Length: 163
Image (cartoon, rainbow, N blue to C red; front, side, top):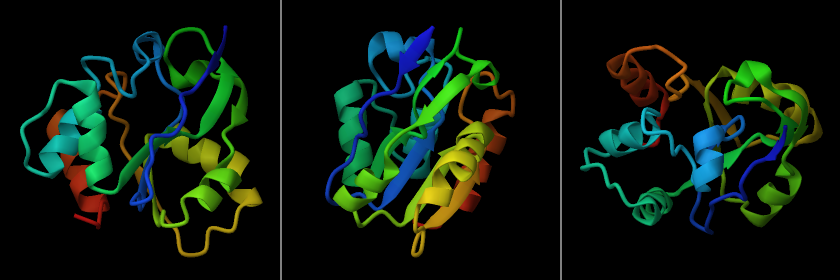
């Protein structure tokens, strides 16, 4: 089935862009980034700032934006059955040229998982001037990535230099 990602969540203060590959089935059905209850993304983000996890999605978005963090996906559309990145076919990347023109303060691209990083470096990076931008490949927060939560959190802490 052909699916589409969400629009970016950004503001003029965003200096960090956290990129997934493509939202999963639960996220798509709820129209929310990282909506699967077992996805560790929101828990990790709040733990990085030593803040109690907020359950309201709009407040989660406000929390990320207030810390200069934007959210998007590398892929704008693809064919995929289920939620696994390994099932992605006929992928079309999002328009990063326009995004970086609209939000020139972005300096850190944080890739939530290997697939997001691989798709970006293969399909997007060759068309961009990435001078002044740092790329960070992080372990996926997806429940399909079976690394223990503590190890995921530690890897995110070690890689994210802006805290």
